[in-house]
Image 1 (cartoon, one colour):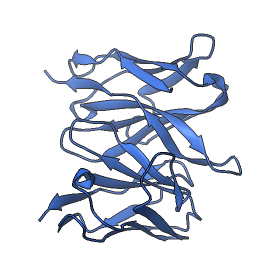
Image 2: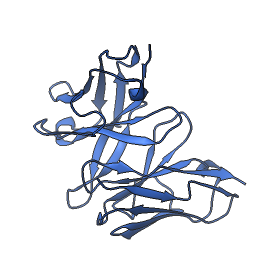
Image 3: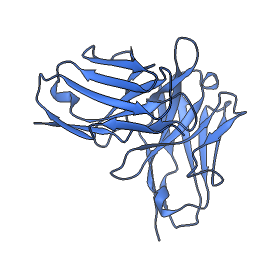
Amino acid sequence: DVQMTQSPSSVSASVGDRVTITCRASHDIGYWLAWYQQKPGKAPKLLIYAASTLQDGVPSRFSGSGSGADFTLTISSLQSEDFATYYCLQANALPLTFGQGTKLEIK
Amino acid sequence: EVHLVESGGGFVQPGGSLRLSCAASGFTFNNYAMSWVRQAPGKGLEWVSLIRDRGDSTYYGDSVKGRFTISRDNSKNILYLQMNNLRADDTAVYYCTKVCYDSRGYRAGFDYWGQGALVTVSS
């Protein structure tokens, strides 16, 4: 199984900050990496798939990069609605596996 | 507009069974693989099972293999998850998800999620 390790597990930031979250796969997963945002009590929302493709309707301040085993989600200028938990998902091989999540909190 | 609506969640004793349903609309259901993802209270996301578009291939996570069965009725646009021999650690919100594909047609993740169905396993 492909293990996904996200870091940090939590981060505090302010509106306007630039934030980076990383995800490392235990095996080469090509570019089959997706990022999700989840707010309390809500279903996850797809932000980025295929490592860097922005899902329709997602603001351009979100961006993704990486390939192989190392991936990054960047929020260029935090907005108040971005405070949430973020997960990565490897879609390369079954079983599909998620990272453990990164909680983005207001400083 | 895509809609995924789960039903069938509830309270069940250990060893019991439950069947979840997911009614899909707003897309051509039989063109897409579908999947179930769960989230235990206060925990992260866990992939549970996936079924291909025609229903001819199914896949399971190790924690549910042999106990859960995924199926679909393409004539009714419904996805199912039959859960047998339930355990306390199956307690979670279960999400029905639609698989999305990249530009070359490879599986790329889940682009639509239902609102979730809570399953509580307890004596």
